[in-house]
Length: 503
Image (cartoon, rainbow, N blue to C red; front, side, top):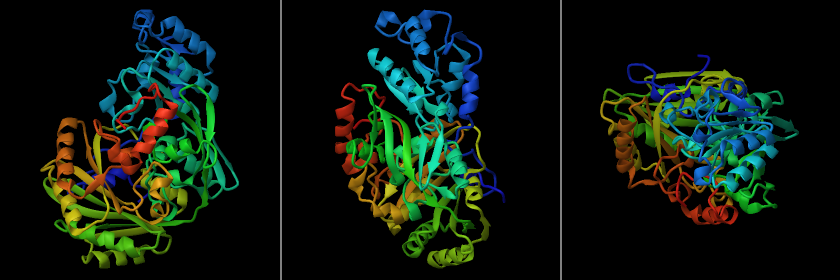
């Protein structure tokens, strides 16, 4: 098998049919987005707009910018300004999930330089317009195209500059581009698996992935953060300079008080990887979860595996997908089955180069838009009651086709203190993502609500990169919420940055 559609593995039903493609994976490259902006509807250089100033966002009658004001901004930046009514605007505001196609931001600005970002932030501040930064367009609740905001779409700023053991990544670069660039140097950083997720957005929320047990979260590799603050100043944050901003950038997600333009990471060397899969009998899900958790306690940190509970037609089938040191796949499979206490109904294993492994887990180098709904819970320990609750939560979907994906949170993730950054889950065992493909959003949310209820007694919170609407920030930041709020208020006292949760 050349690759796996990442959500195809999570959403493969008992009958073998695949559901929707990877949640949060956008097919739109920064180059394609740039071409769209140059298309029809442009009324002046750098501006795509309607012919009527009255349709401009927050026109002068409300004290907001007029079309002339937007034109002036467009003339001051190297990038483009896209306004409602133009074809480029209609194209560029789209996110991965079609659920949010009806979003109506005031404008979409596509900067090409940090100076463009500064001028865009200053303009938004002048007219009291909230700012929504966009890195890859993967927000689970459409936050990067929020109604009434100015979207600063950073995908034209996507340079990756590697030097020695470090790499500087502009905020618009997606995960696959970063991996492909670093592959030529046999280096990498730990990330999630979706190839078109924005590296910046993933990092700011933490960054779980197949390398987390060995090398930590994506945010754990951050050495520096360059960002434009609400007062339009450009600052760099490190562990010793603007350390409060550096702290917030390591897991604070949308509560970061500014627009991140680039991040510096420490890299590590790559090796070939072994990939293994195992499917277990229907009815063994609780046993698989408990055995998997036991296996994590003894498995090498270089081994990683997650559990997929795929529900179709009321039948729940558990499976495991993992990665390990090349040549150790059979050992990983046998030890897993021993801890689970059940023989898999099917197994497979093979080896790949590191970049081919990235492609395999990402389903290739890109992915198509697809509708989905998702939710999140976390458990401190995978006890028998926690495992049973997760199974109960999945089964609450009845005859819908849904999945629960259970990822490990141990290993190197535990090496960092919960107080070292905004990401608080440093002594916990597992993250649960509830996932339903398709456009029955109301039905999916009803199931996810039932799943939350099923695990309420064992859940301690959620992973902010799987953000849900109407949820307080404390669910994602736990004991770090108060400090994160203080940092946010210090730099953004007037609330310029769009915040999709309360702190």
